[in-house]
Image (cartoon, rainbow, N blue to C red; front, side, top):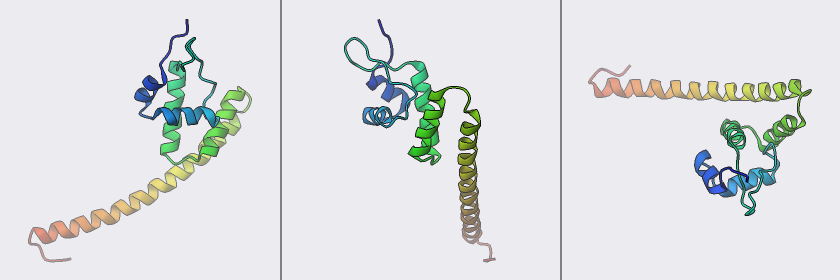
Length: 127
């Protein structure tokens, strides 16, 4: 007997909707076809949930679906393509670091304005 999480349980565990989980399967983002219980219902294993968490992190950091799909293809293909996986992740890391630097710059501007208004509301002369 196959034991695993139902799609509703997997959705609750990952914070995604059942529709999103179905989309991930349909679009080739999963490492394997999620097995089915004798009833026909999906049975997500811990490894499926771990992979979904990784996909969620990659997507949350802005990795395009095509790159997530390519990464999944490489992992499914097995060993021998680690250099390509590494380059894909390094390229994404560069994009994330650039975005992070931009956000930090924007945060600096906000902090500067906060400082001005805090000075003004404390009765200090404007700088």
